[in-house]
Picture (cartoon, rainbow, N blue to C red):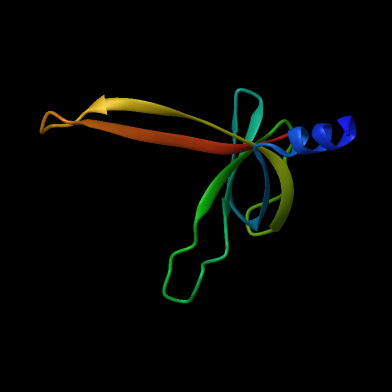
Amino acid sequence: MAEAAQQIQSANNMAIVKGRIDQVRLHDGRHMHVVLLPAVDEFSKPQAVEVRSNRRLGEPGSDLQCRGRLMGFTRQFNTRDGGRGTSVTSWVEVE
């Protein structure tokens, strides 16, 4: 029973990313990969996600499949009309 709980806990916030690397940049010794995900249909734009890693996972134009932890944070701000807005930043962290 403890093993089943451990497996469920280790799966929390995990994501599998399958897509094509669009850009790779180096920031503070970490590789930041912009990965384009397949579009839902021919009329939709592909979604993009940033995958961060200590090592380079591939070159632009190459396909990527990896598993990592979904990370992120929110920021709240005042809008021009006096309301409140929220901005969400998220990425996938691969070891």
